[in-house]
Amino acid sequence: MMTVVSIPKKDPCIVCKFSRKKCIWEDDKASECDRCRRIGLECLLSDDSYESMELYTTEDGDNELQAWQATVDQLDSDMKQHQQIVAQTWWQSSLEWTLTLTHGVLQLETPIRSMEELYMFTQASIRYLSPFSGLFMKQAVRFQSTSLSFTFGISSVVQRKELMNPRKRRLSMLDYNYNNSDVSLLDHRAIVDRLVMLYLDHYNPYLGLVHRATFLEHYHNMSNPMDSALVLAVCIDTLHRVRHRISYTPYEISMISEMLYSRCRDMLFDMYEDAAKKVEIVVITSLITKYTAEILLNQLECNRLVTVALLICTELAGCRTELTPVQWVLLQRNYVNLQLFNRQHKMLYEDKVDYSLLAEMGDIEVLDDEPEVTRTTMHLVNEVFHFIGSPYITSLLNTVNKTFYGESCEILIEDIVRYEPMVKTWWDSLPPHFRICDDPFTPNGYKLVAGKVPATYLAPFIALHLMTGLITSSILQPHVMATSENAATAEAIQVIRRRLVSLALNSCRVAVYALNENWIPGVSKLPSFGLNVIIFGTYFMEKLSGCDDIEFPLELLNMMKRRLESKSKTLIPLCHQVPLSSSLLRSYRENTQRTHLEIYESYPLPGFALLSDILFSSINGLAEQHLKVLS
Image (tube, rainbow, N blue to C red):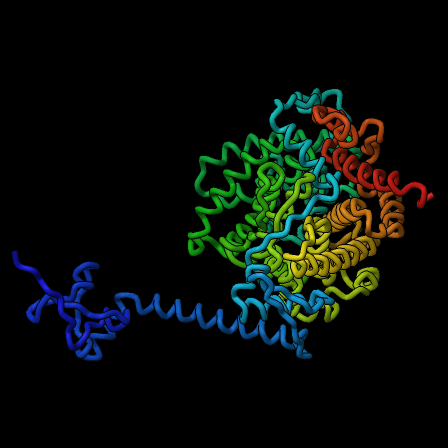
C-alpha cells in the first residue's frame, strides 16, 4: 500500500499566506495545496503577479477582512476613550492595596471606602490578578426583593392572570340605537374635523406619527371622512391623547371611541388584502394601540393587530428604495411605537425586557418640512433609546425585573460597578443642549428639574434617573453572610449597597421634584412623560419603604401624595377613581384568586380606572405604613 506524504511548498499559496497557515502539498507536481483543495478555492502561488493577488483577494474576502479590521479599530478606539474617561474622573491619585494569601485564598486587607475605589480595584484585579478576577467577573450576588410592588408587581400579576380568563363583551360594544342618542353626537363631520385638528396641532408635532401635509391632502379630498380608516384612527387616538382639550364627558368619549374603533377595525381587516396599503396599515395599527390595550384593556386583540403590523414592517424594512421619504419616516416612527407595545406586552406576560427598538431600521429620521419641535423630539428619542436599549441595560433589566414580583435575582458584581461609568459615558456623548449639568448623578439634580428648563431638554436627565432609580431601588437587599473566607467580598458588597441606596434616594428625589406643571398630561409639551414619572417615583418609594435600615424619605412621600391628589382630575377622568374599599389590587394581597377586571369595565374608560387603582393603592399604602409620622 502506497502512503502519500504531504510536503511543505517553498512558496506558499495566497490563501495559506493570508491565513498564516503552513502550505502543504502532496508532491511537487500537485496543482493545488491541501487547504485549497478541501475548501474548493483556486490555489495561486504568492509569487504571482500583483494584479492576480488583487483580483483574488477582492473576490474572496478582502472586503470582509477590511470590515473586520474596521470593527477591531473601532473597538480599540472605544476602549481607549473609555480608559481616558476613567483616568480623567477617578484615577487622579494612585492607590495601593494590601493582599494576603491565607490557606491558598487571596484576600484584600485594605478597606474600600467608595464605589470609585471599588471600580478601580475591580479593573486592577482583572488586569493583574486573573485568579482574583472571579470575585468580580464570576461571582454573582443574590438580591432579595424588598416588597411586592403595587405599581409594577401586583398590577402585572392581575393582568397576566386575567389574560387566561375569557373576556366578556363590554355592554357599550353592542350596537347603538343612534335614534335615541344625543343629536350633537350624530354630526360625524363636525366631530372628526375638531378631533383631526386637535391631533395635528397638539400631539402630532412631537411624535410625528402622521405627516401633516400628506394627511391633510388625503383628508380634504374625501367626501366622507368616515370612509377612511386612517382618519378614524387619528380621531380615536385624539380622544385619549388630547382628552383634556375635549369637552365630552367620559361616557361620550367612550361611546364615540368604540363606534369609531368598530368601524376602523373592520376597514383595517379589509385592507390586509391590498399590497399598496402596507404603510397605511402600519400607521393605523400604531394609532389604535393605546386605545385597544390601555383603555379597553384588550391586550389579546391589540397583540394580534400589532403582530401583523410588525410583520409588515419587517417586510418593508428591506425595501426602502421602493418607498417615498414620507413613507419611510412614517414606517420608522410607527414601527418604534408598535415595538413599544410589543416589548411592554412581553415584559408584562413573558418577563422579557428589551428596548433595543432602533436596531432594525436605524435612528429615526426627520423630513425637511417638519417643524423644529419634531426634529428635537426625534433626536431626543434616538438618544434615549441608545441608552435604555443598550445590551448592558437590557441585561440588567431582564435580571432585576424579577424583583417587581417579590422574587430574588442574581447579578455579577462587575455588572453593578459598571453602571455609573457606562451612564456617564452616554451622558457625555449627548449634545450640549441635552446635558443640563456635568455630572448626571449630582445630589443637586432635583433643583434642576424643578426649574424652568423646557421639558424636551430635561427629558434625557429624567430618563436617566428613572432608569437609575428602577435598577438601584430593585436591588437594595443583598444576601451575603460574612465569613473569614469572604470578608473582602462582604465588604465590597456593603460598599456597593451604600452606593445603591444613595443613587436610589437621589433618583427618587429627582422624580418627585420633576412633578411640576410641565409634567402633567394635557399641559405637558412632552405627552405621557409626567405619568411615567409618577409611576416610577412611586415604585422607588415602595422599594425604599421595604428596607428597615434606610430612613424613608417622608417629605418626598408627602410631596407625591399632595401632587397626586391635587392633579388627580387632570390625570384621571371624572368619576374614574376606584374607591380603596373596591380596589382590586389591594384585595389581591389578601385573596390572590380575585383577579377579574370586571370592576374596571364598569367604568366608561376601563384603563383609567385601572390606572387610578394602581396610583392611589400604592400611594395610600405607603401613607398608611407611615401614617403616624405623616399625621
